[in-house]
Image 1: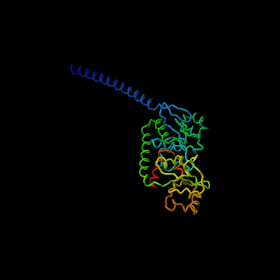
Image 2: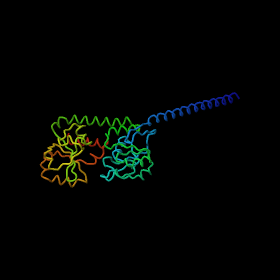
Image 3: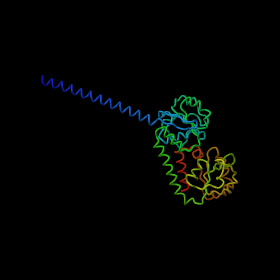
Image 4: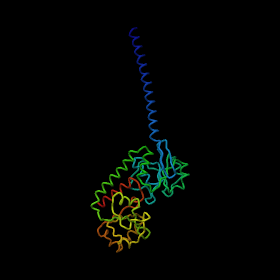
Length: 318
């Protein structure tokens, strides 16, 4: 009887202990959940300035639709993927430089003509658009909160805003810092070698040649980020490009040409290259004309694309 009573008391004590531990564990779990929710709330409640004013998010968007491929690039740089994206008309699909995307985001038409019905069917939490879509803003905003960025806005500012929105501030800052470090290093490498050498960015088009001026956002990589010297004709222009005839090229006397081409201007480019004017250019005779993909160089003003552009410049000029 003594042993039996002792056993019963022991079991009762163990049950009481387990009950107390369980209660303590439940309380700890509840507290952890409260702290996690508070942390999540404080991390995801952000306000973003955009072309339509301010928009505040109290949760991190999960299902995102982008209406410009460059914003797809911004997200992928953070390891994120939208549920839907427009595609580049020049590529007739997503650009090759992005490689194979896991999950196959839904293609929503082109940048110029996004498919609103498809966007609606995806039930997104967020739509990222550009100023080209302002006439659709009310329609898009009725589907989901819609951010409208200036397509020509500095890509670094856009990256930091998207990082803030997705609670990826540190990673976005690292993307910007890594780019700055890369171009700073390359600028130093090229300083002596390219001293006194001029570099032009051109694109044959409409039976003329488009010369991208120092204000063009890709040309700024060459001239601002890397400190290369533009031809005089590319400076002091009111627009980001000017149209010149092939006969002007010898007067420009550029030492290096980055020549942008794709399927739309391949025939025109070949015609220009077959002229005596072209063949007599110093850059041509010295094999300092570098043919590059138009879409990659001027179509996607975003971190993955621009890092590739910088790498291609380094490969040609180093």
